[in-house]
Amino acid sequence: DAGITQSPRHKVTETGTPVTLRCHQTENHRYMYWYRQDPGHGLRLIHYSYGVKDTDKGEVSDGYSVSRSKTEDFLLTLESATSSQTSVYFCASTGGISDTEAFFGQGTRLTVV
Amino acid sequence: GQNIDQPTEMTATEGAIVQINCTYQTSGFNGLFWYQQHAGEAPTFLSYNVLDGLEEKGRFSSFLSRSKGYSYLLLKELQMKDSASYLCAVTDSNYQLIWGAGTKLIIKP
Image (cartoon, rainbow over all chains, first blue to last red; front, side, top):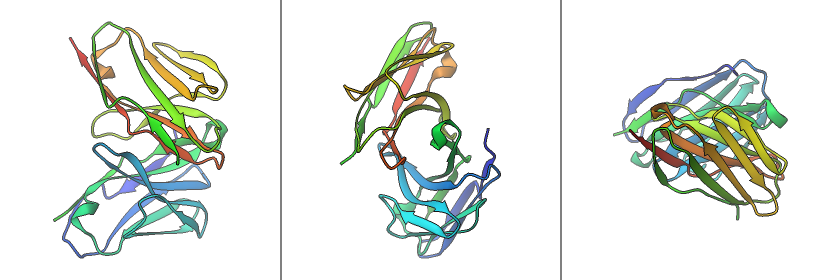
């Protein structure tokens, strides 16, 4: 299995504060992703990266930014957290079968109060 | 637009067989994945289909028909631990993964 870890695993923050979630992978995968998962919506793509300093927006990117300064690290920042950003966040990288098999981190449960 | 449809929830009995369907409309097709996700955990890989037909792996099988934009996941000899959500995902022409909302499978004794 790909080694992919997220931190923190749980976080409670106040509305209006910035929050950064971290993702670290040890498989040298080129592509990395940030998703949010909410009941009834499944996995929704926030941002993805196709290389160091190369990132692009997903379908729900408003209010989020990302950075990738090294192959192994992908950061997600909520610039000013809102209650609508309360969710479970998953980081993933792709490799394996046809280079598109997704390997997921354990997830981060974020609550914005 | 791109779309993947799965039933929201299904219920089955321990020891029985259940089939979870997935239909897709995507910009191109480069493979279909099934993932299992237990409550509070990350999705984990179950199966991959890129050619038409059936792929069997133990108690789980996955079928693909590219002409119909259709796949199913077949679970046999259901066990209580199979209670989970099952996610269908398609790789499109840009090799991006498009995800369905998932099917919550409830197993009853």
